[in-house]
Image (cartoon, rainbow, N blue to C red; front, side, top):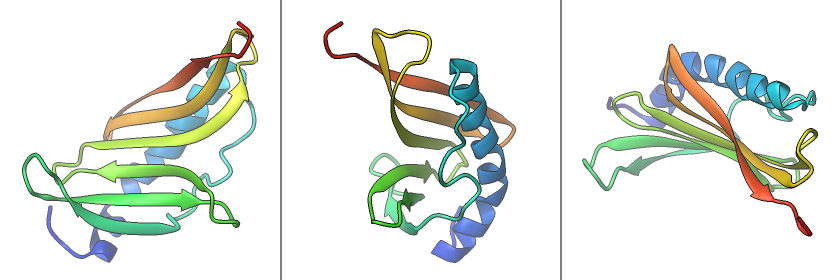
Length: 124
């Protein structure tokens, strides 16, 4: 998929509409009820990046806090395949030996999968 940054962001709107609920559902299954801080908001920054594998233009977008801290990112390849991750950094509410580092989603529109990225808790 070619096009300007604005066109690529517009084309990614259906993906974003599915992405937020997929990430939120993954967190809810783990027992975290807080919504993603940036759920439904447009990216704070985006750019087109060359894919080193096939040299196509991939859309890269970031969500940042009001203070500029990175909250999450999204990479959408030219073929529509996407990967997103959002930092969580909370103790797992049901498994005290784990910390939820991030929630991730991957796939394409209509076929997104999501999971938590866990780290061992200190002292476990």
